[in-house]
Image (cartoon, rainbow, N blue to C red; front, side):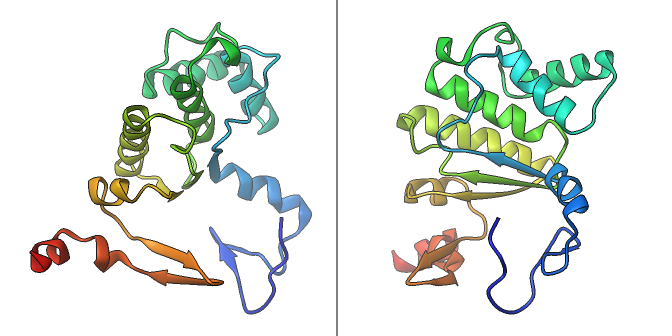
Amino acid sequence: ELDVAAGDAEVLGYDMLHIKRKHIPQLRRKLGIVFQDFQLLTDRTVYDNLEFVLRATGWKNKGEIKDRINEVLQLVGMSNKGYKYPNELSGGEQQRIVIARAVLNSPEVILADEPTGNLDVETGFAITQLLHSISEAGSLVIMTTHNMQLLWEYPGRVYRCADHLITDVTEQYSVASSIEEK
């Protein structure tokens, strides 16, 4: 959505300085997005929310659509909630549906914007565990968080965004550095 201010930028093989408008939908199919505030369509059931995304990204076969929706609902532990509307679900359940929506097209990268921000601690850890298992299955998960405890529980590359800079602070959250401090 933002123009590149300086330098080069490449995302999943697409040159962001010269990407053609017709290639943006192809790039978006390679990305899954998990929003903090869910962004579910409130006038549609869970199944219809997921079907909408698949149809919007070019899926046409009804049987394949149904199979894929059932597969992602099972992945996130929500296989019995397809008939419900978002307002009938808890916050944690809604976030699981958002994750199901994000993985529908088997994206290479999942961007998770504070996915635990509106959830209680226990549900937040369950959502983080789900994202962790998705990353172990092969998708890169990039997650923003203010919950520093998650960084200890789910180690990975850690970058801090502050004062208009992005700094690699992974070492501060590694098990080895915490042992050295003790």
